[in-house]
Amino acid sequence: MPQRAYDLAVAAGPVPTTTPTTPTTPTTTTTPPSGGCAVTQRVVSSWPTGYTGEIVIENRGAPLDHWTLTFSAPGVTVTQGWNGTWTDTGDVVEAASTPWNGTLTTGGTVTIGYNANYGGGTPPFRSPTLNGRSCA
Image (cartoon, rainbow, N blue to C red; front, side, top):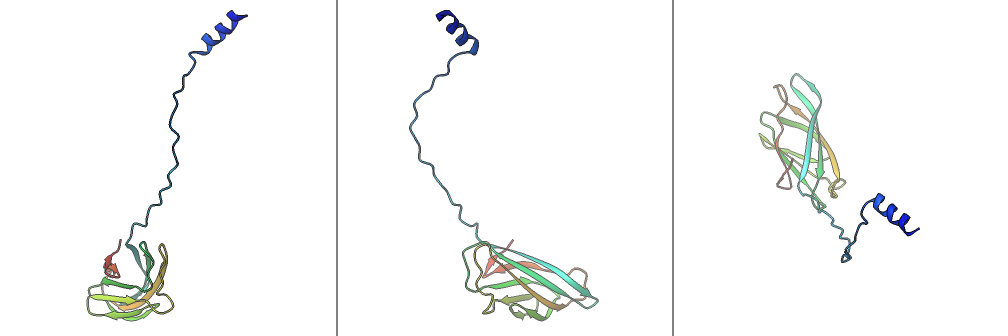
């Protein structure tokens, strides 16, 4: 009988050995938000002398209790805006939060819109910043 047990061990291959290890404590890492923001703009409708634009602002940083979006739009004149207080100073447009949409949580979004005069092809929308920080 002892011979048979030996044959099975050889047929199964070498017996693995183990080395004692020091137990570890699992670590949980929470990655902080990358910061900044993302802004997308799209033309909802257009006509020969203007268009309606929609902008979605996403906060990727710390929560905000108010916000101001600024962007460059050469040749565009904003004639009406909603969900923000709009200012057009020539080639730079600014939209500030209102009392009902000023809070913007981390990962939160807000949608604003406007009508504008523009006589070209695709309306320009460049260099958006949220509270002075550049957006993607």
